[in-house]
Image 1: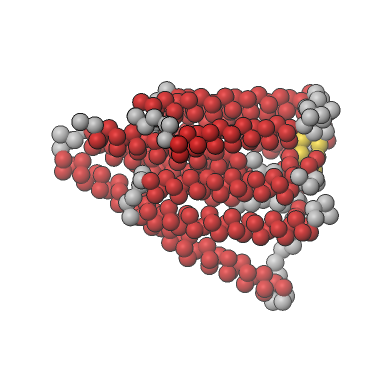
Image 2: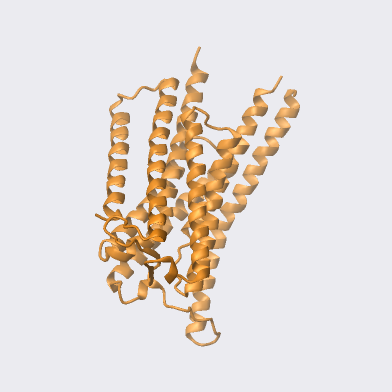
Length: 173
Length: 195
């Protein structure tokens, strides 16, 4: 393969990555706030009985008798905070990908922050749900958060080590 | 003793290991040559393989304990908690469709564990960015999505919904990372073939 062919293929791949990253970033930046506003709007309309929404078959487990109301409120606030940090980090990360910055220290940092966010979410769930009533609630906890956090942190660390190996090899005389 | 302390012990050990590595990095005692970096990756992969193997053994025993009526830690007989209000002490108590969905979920969990074990095996052998690595990473993303769908089906059948969308977002993110890694790998291969 000569240089021109290789260059055009590489360019095409990078363009594809940048385009997809841009679409995802735009969806995160504008689509998610619109979805939230839309959901709130539907809720307000349903509360005023302007429209009818189907009732959930059972109330959400968080409003059951077994879970303390204060714990539910605190869990809701902490979930929102976690979502906010996830949202901010995801926007930053896809912004880097959109600019063609793929395997650098900045992107690795964003990836590892996302892994930590999932781990924090799992810890909050463990403390707020499992500790007060351990018998049943811890068994229904979503362990996928723990699994996801370890996997994402490990992938981030791996990419960082591989990047440093390559940089050090390039500096070798 | 029930499985709760086991999980906390595992988390404490993981925390100690990570803190120890972080302290070594900060103190500058860590060797930065490429071969030592690779050795660290291999060592960490070996540790994770051990954790996965241990978790799979516990998970398989817990499922067998439920179906055969064996004790599981302090529970005798073993229980299966499908959702907040649905705890079963034997398969006979479960509706047929719920039992089928639970078995599908168990199968998915074991398949994902096997793929993860194979992935860390590749890392342990020093193979970091091959097509097979990307395949196993992408499988984890699809596992999170399929697992969410099965959970949704179980909870809507039981009319007891309490699901978060975070596994869906995580699954989509992992699939995207796998694609980025694959494209990066192909770019590198094409550059290596340049005359």
